[in-house]
Image 1 (cartoon, rainbow, N blue to C red):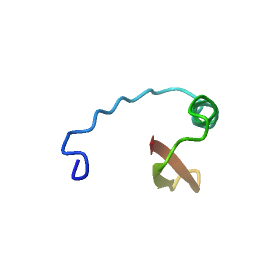
Image 2 (cartoon, rainbow, N blue to C red; image 1 turned 90 degrees about the vertical axis):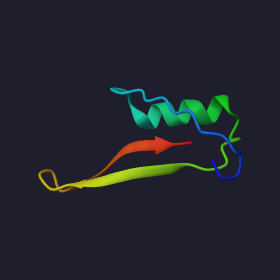
Image 3 (cartoon, rainbow, N blue to C red; image 1 turned 180 degrees about the horizontal axis):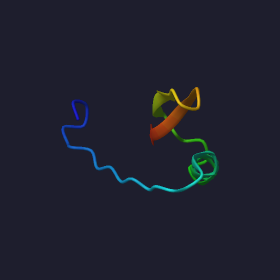
Image 4 (cartoon, helix red, strand yellow; image 1 turned 180 degrees about the vertical axis):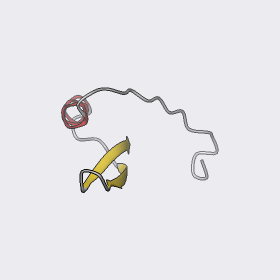
Length: 56
């Protein structure tokens, strides 16, 4: 927002395989992705680190 002087638009798609979706996006964008941020949390029940949001 600071750099572009505009509010970003964001859409969320749920119930998909995130790894496959990211691979497809990289293929379509021809590796033109400049930055990606991932939000993660630690699931205490399964004792695993889970990535639940990826912003590209």
